[in-house]
Length: 270
Length: 286
Image 1 (cartoon, each protein chain N blue to C red):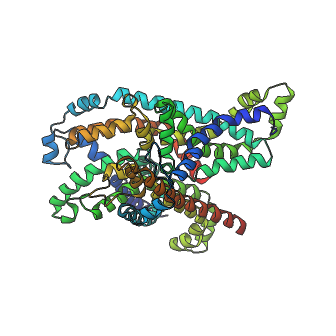
Image 2: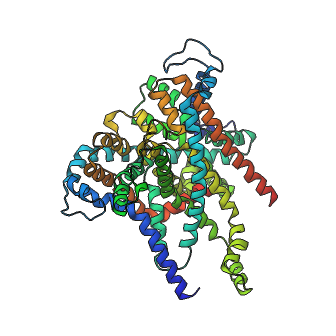
Image 3: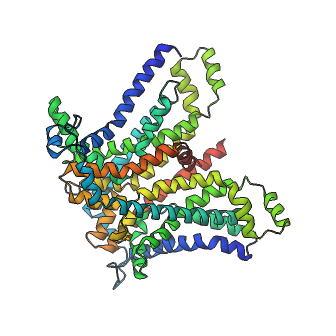
């Protein structure tokens, strides 16, 4: 390609990139304005800039509390999903019978069912046994998200030769030891993918936790929804809240970008 | 591992129990309740197909159905065209192309609820400021009509998901052997010919993957709908998922909500099954 057309493409790309970043520019700049400043011009840079919105929304959002809840729920659910799904996939993949292919089909068929089709009886049942809290929520995430994870693990397991299992068995390892010490470490690239896909989905989830969690255990999206209802006409506070709530996600993205892109690709293509 | 061995079942127990309690049992209960007059706690009698007949005449449901269908058609086309366009753009060799990839995918990391709030600000405040500066009336009063609500939802979805679709197209574009393109170049094929005769046929499988992904995602959208328009004005921008939630938790009409949820299941499952069938067929053809 000629140099000139490369330059043209680069300029075109930069313009599209700026268009994509424009919403971020809007919320960040306006979050530093006073109500008067937003009213005067939403497009200009903040003048004078104020940090007050952040102090106020930090308190109103109970940011530390909701960040902690989000972290606990996401980390515990994802660990639970990784452990249980890899175990299940291992059992299914190493058992060559009609039963195991039937069970795999059962797991995969669960992916056809949309959340709205189960949500009402699900929350009624869990409410009946007083499990509408973060522990019940983690168990629900295991139920909803194990299917895709088992499916992904199962594909990787088929490329790990059975000789590995046999060698460990000869040395007297139990089934659990074979899985935990030999097989699970070999699955780590897929574990990263499974972790990434579930972290993104669970961290951002709104509807399920809104039906399950008591107010004391609210995650960031739930707290944002309430907060927004309260400050709906006070954009200066709402925008500071939005900016605060996306900072953890953006930091995670920039730090783990390589794995995120790979994980998302694997999840969609396989 | 043998079927009868204890470890086989121990390894499977946690996920099987979770799947049964979280997905399959509630699904069967829901199916049963859709034929009753369930009020969320108890029911007095079976009503046959009454709930299903009611939903056919339910204006909110019918309106949500057509609104969702229109939304899905527009977003499937827009996402695939823009996603492929972005993928072609960032796979060119120029300085900053990998930074652009980062930028285009970024909105996909943010949850639908917060995305909706971000764009609510841009549509209501940013657009009207632009509109009055440029004397463009069509930029003002966004989200106050069904039409602007519809296009608002489309724009949010495109901004969020284009980067995701782009990533998938990139994965397939990178699998095209460079030698084929170079050979065509030497043979004198133009850039347009190289795209239509080589690149496009070679990424055809990506097109299938992306089309079904955007199709089923489009039908299931809820968060963006809730935070951007809230279904308003007057429920005119309410989509299927939101109509089900509102029928249950706002109108407390649980058995009708279950009937709607079963229809919703049939639509979403049908899309996925057609995809599976289509993929099988393609693999056989190859």
